[in-house]
Amino acid sequence: MGRDVNLNRLAVFVALVRAGSFTAAAAQLGLTKAMVSQHLLRLERELGVTLLVRSTRRMALTEAGAVFHADCVQLLEQAQAAIERIGDQRSTPTGTLRLTTSTDYGTAVVAPGLAAFRRLHPSLQVDLVIDDQISDLIAERFDLAIRIGWLRDSNLRAVRLGSFRQLIVAAPAYVAEHGAPRRPEDLATHGWIAMSALATPLRWTFTHGNGSRRIVRMRQVMQANNAAAIRALVLAGAGISALPDYLVQEDVQAGRLQVLLAPYRLQEGGIHAVYPDPQPPAKVRAFIDFMRERLAKR
Image 1: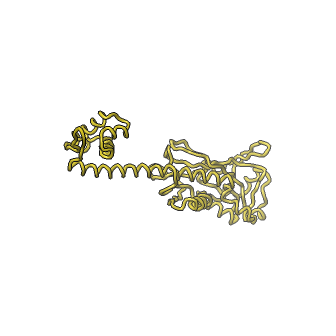
Image 2: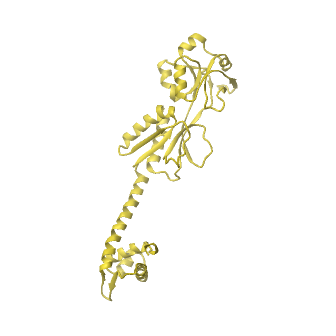
């Protein structure tokens, strides 16, 4: 029988008891007195019990009505609390922020960013999953992903946070032994450490400041499937490679790596926040805004 009860009538019943009369309840609810009466009659019919006894001058709860009224009050208070909690999630970062990103970017940029973000929101919990595979955000219940490079087509929402440059780098010891390439074509005679995860790991397009473009095919001496591993190989003097600026910036500043062919640029990559929720909660919106501002400062 409970499945046939119109739950909206519970609120009318509670308002009626609180107001003390049909006239007062109708004014509070913005209904006519007849509509309030009809709601009560139908609720009693749906429940199969009498909730109120009334005369021309007064009304009173029956024993069953008093018990049911107490339960309805508690139910409506719980519903209101649930609505307020949802409202809090829309306006204040709360709960757990669960996100995923790649190994190199997650370690170099996202993890330090999360530490700073949580200092602003100490009640927020964070669950960071590092994975170089593309995760299913819906199936694995991620709030968002930070993805690097060039986005695939999908039904997910995406916000561009910034971009990164790819730099041709080598260790000073390698340059001292093999010399520095002066033109992109010179790279074909050097030992190239390839990123095996790329679609064309040995074919690179260089653009000069004057707009001219050159395509070079590299001579591979080693390969790895992870940018952090390639960085370690380059630092060890194993060869030359292209690495994202966020991963080698400190190495270049410290003199551990040298940037080669500075007048030329490789294609820049995007940094995107990707999320499944068309109306993301406050924790997601706040982190996106925080990271966009943080990357702009970099």
